[in-house]
Amino acid sequence: MDNLTDNADWTGIDMDSVGVVGKTHGYEYRGYMFVTPGEVAVARLLDLMGVPFTPDVFIKVKTSLWPGRLPLVYVPDFVLNRRAFVWTDEDGSRELIHGFEVKQRSRDGDYPARGMRKITVLREAKGIRIKILDELWIRDQNCLPIMPLDSGS
Image 1: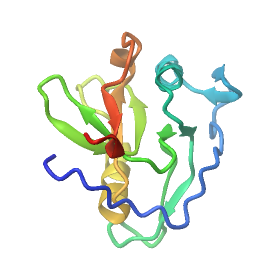
Image 2: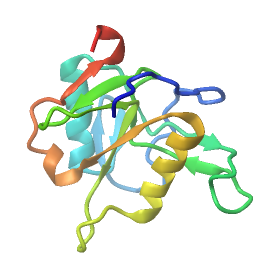
Image 3: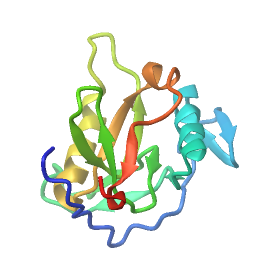
Image 4: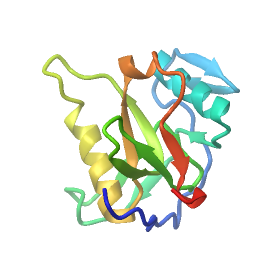
């Protein structure tokens, strides 16, 4: 991504955690419940790096980009409290992000299509960019390759 300008529209989005929806078990960290060990790993890494976050933020977007008449409803695993960060891949490529979704790949090697579509619609409708982190990959990491956009990155 060449253009690292933050154009996210946070209008109507409260930074309140709605908690884990529809799950009866999980992992507790800092008073929040998480569904997978990968989600706990992300929470710990963000804490270690001093990056403020809110898990499970309810986002509702009315947009013609989402099929049907109902608005898009999406609860990303992590929102970085309305701040933009730059993720730098191993190859040096950079992308603007506002949060994370931890997903495990299916047997065919892809992430769930419905979740991917919600991430795309949220980016196109509101400029909010959620980065997919692989459930198995994140468990072995000791930091995240992110820096705040406003740090001169």
